Image 1 (tube, rainbow, N blue to C red):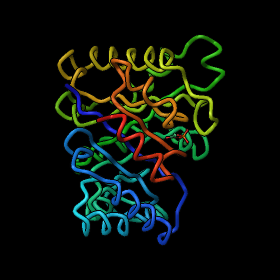
Image 2 (image 1 turned 180 degrees about the vertical axis):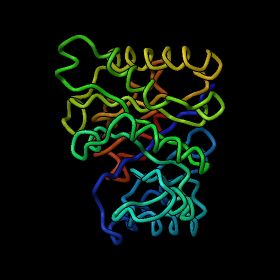
Image 3 (image 1 turned 120 degrees about the vertical axis):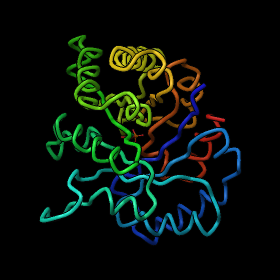
Length: 255
Ligand code: PGA
């Protein structure tokens, strides 16, 4: 049985002061079931990681923290970048890689995503590898091929033992921040194709152990239908993770 995961991707939202308030609000809603029956993760902006972690530690709240991106080199002359050792020291155990906004707005390639995933694994962190098609690809009818090619590229050169710690998030670009969620059937079809690809790469045991999340306008109104799908193990949530009450509802749907 896979442990469900609910991960909040705060994107470029919340100053330190705001992040402390939101983390505290989440911590106030936390119960031990959140950690016992699911993996709950928040992914604030870099500057908010330490303050958020401090709130969680003070309250002994078992919500994990993750970064939204990382650079693959451990240190050096890479102005503006943040390394795996830096986020690890703060206490991050996860890191999103290959989000469609990074691919589209910042030119991140499949090769970059692969390097980042490998650097995270080497540092003992679990990558949350994002994949997903544009509306043009969906309309062409080549979604599964496109998304599964992204999965293969992201996992190139990663062995089964390391793959097992990774999480894959299927996020159709047309559903992100648009209020237009994929139907549970649409999301399930692609998540099943992703798991079949992982099975080809690593065998059935590993693919059955890996979490595949759905992301794209997930909210308290649509989470039940999505979570009822056999190949959807949780969510990567943007907008609805910025409000403690709605994120807590999403977590409850995982328990
Ligand atoms: P959304 O974002 O929930 O606001 O659609 C999801 C994501 O991009 O991770």
